[in-house]
Image (cartoon, rainbow, N blue to C red):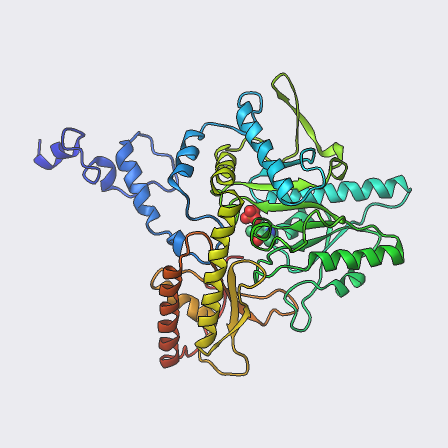
Length: 460
Ligand SMILES: *Cc1c(COP(=O)(O)O)cnc(C)c1O
């Protein structure tokens, strides 16, 4: 037998790059007939993943990219726990419940120990559940009065795509308030034109995806109070706090945006964003039991009794929820405050430094909303490059910064947004700043002849 063949059979040598599997490309279209050595398959797949961007340098994402080793351990230990099996894993179910009540308390629910809520895969699923509850509640009220209930609409500002999905999947007209003038959020005075008897609710976003700023929930509620006095329409608010729901309570505690406002009936947030849990968990909480129509709730067996559930998914991993509970206990309110505050400080520092560079005009400087920075190229100047070119240029060193147009009517304004989240240290931000400076110098000296504009990299 030729020597090279002998070497390639598994034996004492056993090098993962010299085993049979590694002299072929990995299969793409068909499950291979034969089994393979686990360590070589593991390494080959891991190597392919080297081609992914480095998540820590991805400043487009709001999601967790750094966690303590204990979080990884808990995730690993819980990999077999299915959160839907309440009867089989009652303590995981108990931990989920504790989280719901802690979050309800964090958001000032009037009787947080009795409020209903649940975990979801993220804010998108939570938005579907929140939207469905609004739709059911509205329809029941309309039917009770003998009125038509076939043309529901939902009013919102520049929402995340999950609300467009909700509207399409569940047959609701989405009335998105266009951005007029300099506005980057929905304004209270806009509501009157968009709300009517068929409005199932208004979605207010705490932490608009495009800029990071908060919509003024209290002022929106006051505008709806006025609409109710004028027309009798009692329109509830759902707050999409995907990011802000786990930021505001810790670093902007005076800001009233949550259940302190009567009109706010439900709130969602992503545990895996500023809740600092690993990817795969979101939350929704209703103000009180009455705000979640009982027709939407199913019962599952739980310790011989019944447990109410409301979800689009069935099987789902329990580890993220357990890790969320770990974070609550491990960090405490003070820990969240310190982490988010240092992110805010870094975001504001970065905004100030970026403003000094000249070509960038800061639209949101990290003050008052999420820890992030949003800017555009200064207007009325021929820069010789676009923000898309800048995104491409900094990507050379691995930095990922999203460039994208604002929603209508400001579609012609292209912005960039840099998220400063847990793990984006001042040092890392300073390295990024250097890279942006270098990129701007390069683009200034080498204008891009024909603009390659177009979303070369966009989070949305
Ligand atoms: C991220 C985000 C969502 C979607 O949340 P997922 O947890 O990614 O499903 C919804 N709304 C807003 C405002 C967001 O920022």
